[in-house]
Length: 165
Image (cartoon, rainbow, N blue to C red; front, side, top):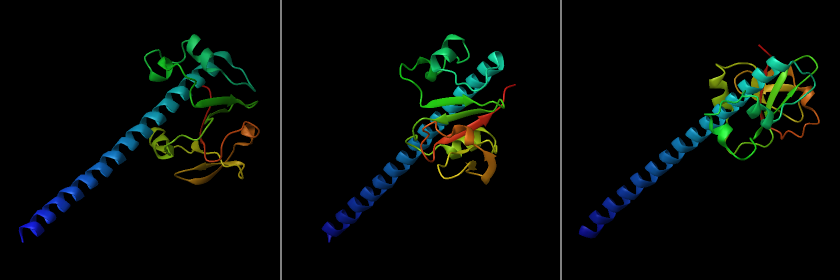
């Protein structure tokens, strides 16, 4: 009889531990996705400031140029990182700036990007078979992203569109 009582208590404790561990993992993944989205937002702001100052068209700005011109804040972890960021950019002939991921982030950050942008239609995913931006909030936005064709962007990569200030 005591064996059954001890077994029930141990199973209950194991169940609680297993549930807590999963909750901890979910919270950790959420914080990682938030940090990655915040890095993309910071990178986007630096790119917009750079193109506002230089007014280049049909061009990309390198990460080194963002750092050396002071467009990227030196306090940011993105600035202090020795590796190249996961983000890239392109400004087309019409002055539209595209900030996109070179590789798919390990976590899906589209929800966090939508939150950071206050559910902007200018945040979405690049789809290889589609010529328009796919928003996590609005679906097909009908905003063309054909300027990114040939940029070797993976299917499903986050894209954030901007204009100069």
